[in-house]
Length: 207
Image (cartoon, rainbow, N blue to C red; front, top):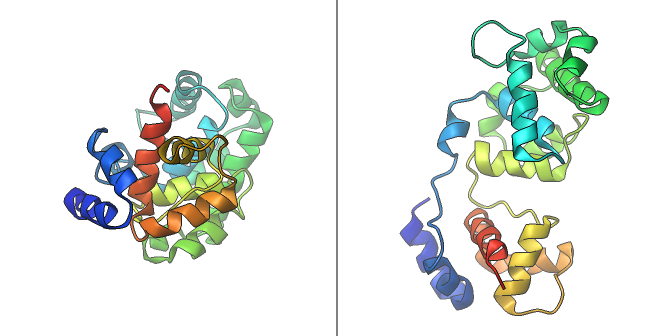
């Protein structure tokens, strides 16, 4: 996705967002470099670990999980299924997160979830398949689409940061509902991923 092309599009369809974007951190090339280096399984397993945890705590738990294997590489699906539950709980994984990663690994190993072909799937198929996995909801699946697969037109309307970004961008008193946020985002198609990036940056700005 060309940054110039994206900003030119925003300039045509939404001058407020275009103006805000020019003063913010540039939209990066997706997938992000750190996501390019890891497998689809690792990306999703890490996302499960990081859910509802501070980044430092989640990184510590994930590092301990990686240490269950030899070397510095992350465990593969088959290896995760061979670990004793006690070992996985011992690295700090909650029971629900342990079961979620095991379910993900089991689906991959059985061939039920063929992540090797996921890059060829339409967005909706990716979402539908991923949310069947225990512990992976719509938001996590959307983050996978954006940050791992680099899809240009994804909009997580339930994300509070996105809603807060719209509130600040449009000078609203209250955050929009997910339905209102999705309607607001229609003008940014087909670059709603970039719009989301800028909305997160806008939300982070001090009032």
